[in-house]
Length: 122
Image 1 (cartoon, rainbow, N blue to C red):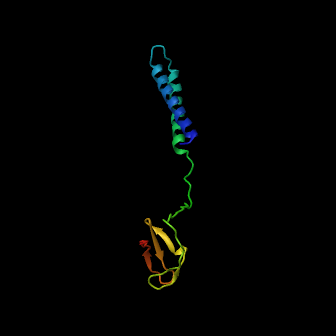
Image 2 (spheres, helix red, strand yellow):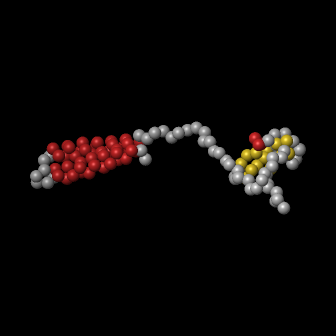
Image 3 (cartoon, rainbow, N blue to C red):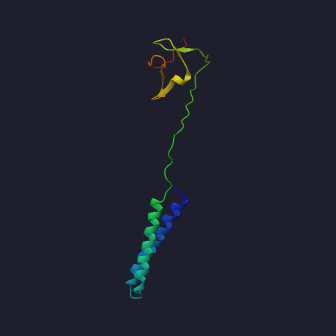
């Protein structure tokens, strides 16, 4: 929450409390009927400040969100040419995407899609 909104809410609460006290005080034996007008003005200022605190906020940021994905491979990894299981065409790193947390390959040659699996080392 921004500092301006917090200040607006606190100030609005103070105005509303004192305005309510002024309105109550107008009905006491020592009170004056003019205090009702002061109380109504205080209530109006308090509710305007509350409205400003609620509705005057920066617009949400729109745009693309950049997500970086780092893959930590166990042990020594040597780079080999990856070939499509269906057509045998070469695949690049641009053809590999993460879908639901699993690496998925789409062949640009035959449009076959399959999940990459890690073969056991033994």
